[in-house]
Amino acid sequence: MDRAEAVLCALVVLIIAVSLLSNVLVLICFLYSAEIRGQVPGLFTLNLTLCNLLLTVSNMPITLVGLVSRAQPGGDGLCRAAGFLETFLSTNSMLSMAALSTDRWVAVVFPLRYHSRMRRRDAALVLGYTWVHSVCFSAVAAGLSWVGYHRLYASCTLSEPGAAGSRTQFVVFTVFFHSFTFLLSFVVLCVTYLKVLKVARFHCKRIDVITMQTLVLLVDIHPSVRQRCLEEQKRRRQRASRKISTFIGTFMLCFAPYVITRIVELFPAVPINPHWGIISKCLAYSKAACDPFVYSLLRHQYRKTCSDIVNRLLKRSSVNASGLGRETPADCTPGAE
Image 1 (cartoon, rainbow, N blue to C red):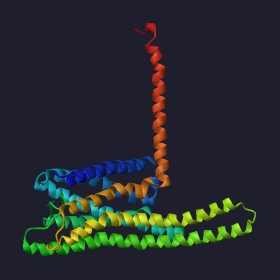
Image 2: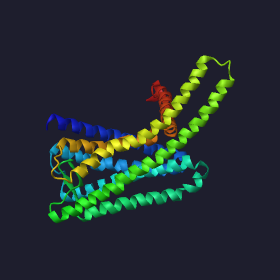
Image 3: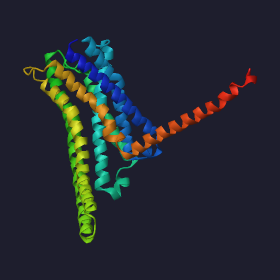
Image 4: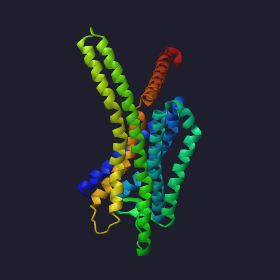
């Protein structure tokens, strides 16, 4: 194993650790907070979290073993099952992000009609589509033996067949698969979040107008207070743009290199560096580690839930410690024997 492969192995281990801990924390918050469970976006977040967790505990370790051993981990049956699972989970997670963006678009653009337009039944129908979509593409790939060990990515994933006749079908399938999964999700993310950004900027502009009118009327206001108000206006405008950029940017940064590499791979005349293949795979895996922070843990509701869990654990540990402290003198009395 050369130095580059050792660095890639360490990167995979880091992604596994961060993804496992963060997604488990999101799942704990979901189970602990009745408020989070009662909200419609919680269903989409739960589905995304479960997909990321399954991908972390099933496919990432197999990729790590394949990278270390430079060979297929396990038998053909295990690798085909892992390839089917990876195709399903990756597709489902992309569509779950698109579903989350659609939910936020409805909440921002139609705030008064949100509860009638996005009910739990509607969310279940959307999640049902993500599952059917993911199962169909995964089942076709597995049924035609288009999943297996791929040396370029050191993992069990979509793999090109050896027969020349099947290769044309595989090329068509790969193009359709990424078009109706990655490209569809990307278009939905862009359309919905850009509309959300447009509405957010409109509201910020109205607030800014009211603030400036107030500052003009308050002629005796201290210059430092006026400056803070102006800075708050700027931060408010930047906050919405930063959130939208994070949602779309992380999606593109993590998935686009891998998808582009899979498309370029269809042209045998274009050489692909084997280290780049593994790097693109690691970037795709890193989305499972980013999602808990992008969609959950940095939000106020999840931070408050985490704080409540920590405070409850600390309180319980302090109660147990004080209880043990009261029992200790009784055991040490002369007549205790």
